[in-house]
Image: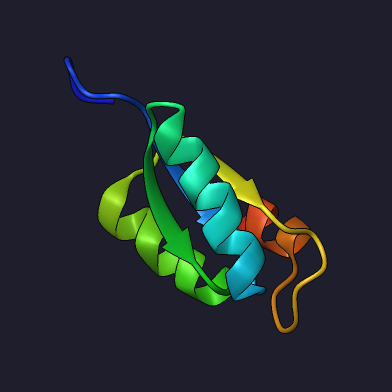
Length: 73
């Protein structure tokens, strides 16, 4: 986290409507939000943006949230 900036949340959710709902809630709570529709895209975004926290869906096609968590560690 950069001084003076709110934390950056990487939100990983394959359902667009759900992702938008959570993103709006987090943004209105004062957080910065980066979104990813899949585990693979989340790995790319994490490498590009270095989020402070990752919020992920567990049940996603391809790479699920548990595998994503393992790879991010």
